[in-house]
Length: 83
Length: 538
Image (cartoon, rainbow over all chains, first blue to last red; front, side, top):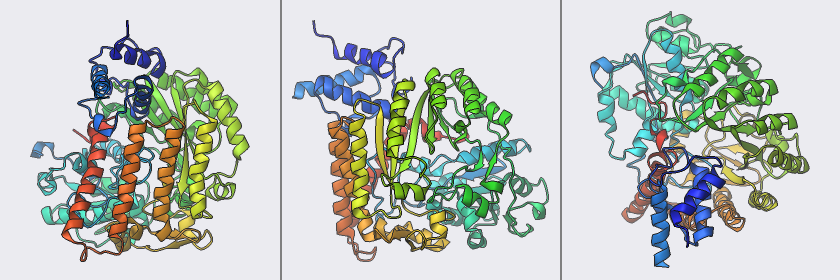
């Protein structure tokens, strides 16, 4: 069975972006928790682009749409449907 | 502000241009690839000196409030500035004039405060204020000018503790002749636990002045000794005080903190060994180190053993060794840098390296400036898969007064256009930023510098996409914005506020709003959103 986008993102953050970071609730604020900063943000965008083939631009990066794994997953899925 | 909340001193950090939100006759043009410089064209920098002043005055029993007007106005486009200031009734206003890029904002803010509060004295101080102290005195709204790097005695005297005439560096009614204080050691000590709990970004100052004299820096060793009264160009803070300050960062409740190590204290291996455990105990995630001299293997091994991730900011300045040497980076060549980078990535797991290249340096021709971007690509390709990034930083708007290049312009091939307060203030309000630059070089005129910067920035973005450093969509947006900026600048070329038609004014307004909204987003909705209240007293 294909893994969900949320699962893949969560694993990427815990294994590659911040090795050893505890399990992530998909509704946790990533900025608030210190998971995302300007460097990490670019890495996540690069990962999303490579792994899911979707391109997210600046308009997608507001706190309202890019702050939790669930929000990022929703963006990726929405773009995937548009393609 | 209610009367009970009124402080003794209200410190204000103005934007570069006070009425920037209404200006449709200045294009606040973007530059850089978007990440290299984290401030907008209104320079909403973090006023760390304010925090030190607040701490110093608290020891005298005075209460200080800090308002970062630049950031406030950026994040709250509807903020009524006169309305806000009208409610403020401190015993003394302090306006920060540390960076020359605030020249217009400082003068306009002082005029506004004079109008709103003619009965409250106002003092201006900071690095730029020190350089321009003679010209500042007597300007509308400015009662006192405080020069030099030891402001506490002067401010305490203005608040009633100590004699005005004995306060060094102070000029104004009842004050002395403004002789600068001589500084041998630096005793300002910050307690970071008093900073808002959501702030997770800290700066460490190990003294005043600097160990280095970079050609373009007005805060370097030579400038500090010659212009700022710092004996030997660097006055260190006592080590126990410095360690206490770091311990207060560790004790601050924020999680996954970032600490920026200013002034190269980490080059002292013993000090670095003492500091790392302190930072580790306080959940510090990243330590930013500005690397002028390549750190030794022993340093790297120390960093490699720590849980604190180092972000090594290598100020290479140029790919050209001649230029590097002039800027003060002549101690290592390309081969040494490459060997060192290999060492960093093998000895320090988790290390991130950022390499900074400057535009606007001596010997740098148009082709040379583009070659900086080309060299950036070489580095990105050579270190594919490694956490290494390269940034181009055009020197704008001014060459620093007090810097070696500024003080000896002919020797280093510079021609200066503005050298006085009114000139700098006017420069900041020029429609086209080319006309506001205070310098050009023998090798690159102002005319050619601007398009060259955009070409180099665009090339850098493309190199980053090609080497997998930048997501395609973000890069596309940046390239489009760079193109749009250049196009608009071309159409503004030769116009003045008088000849600028309504259609272009609207376009300028729309463009500026986009620039400001982008930076406000970084502050409010992105990684930097907590900076909004950075150092502000709440």
